Length: 159
Image 1 (cartoon, one colour):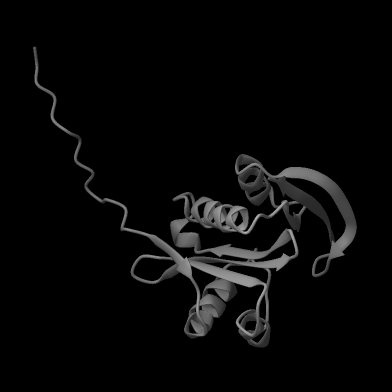
Image 2 (spheres, helix red, strand yellow):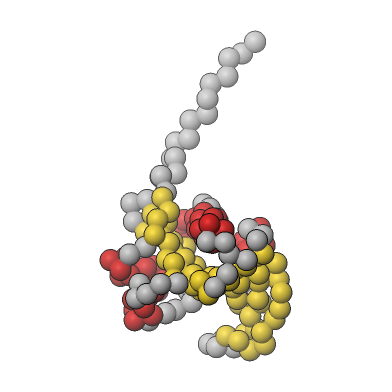
């Protein structure tokens, strides 16, 4: 019988942590968002506003640098996933899934009933991710997006 040896990964994935973002992360978040064409583009003031009061949650995924982030808003027992961006360099390495899982855990701890989001109808990779994470399509908003004009698909995660 031949002895098997554990497989050696020549390029192991760096340790990635998910943490609550702070104001000092805005510059990196903005730079990351600007580098990702499909991201929802917010102004610096909009990112700063996330840290201005209660009811907002920003999470970052980082190893050596911020590789992704998520912004959500709590309105009573409902939440809205407002923005999620992951660096093109680490796509398909579960950063978005980990960010969404952390949001679900935090919303559940706050006794959330549901999380809503909208996504461009043409954004198939994002739609597949949301569906994989348990979100279900609940509607279509015609002409919701601009530049270019496009429908939004509305999703809901029910706890």
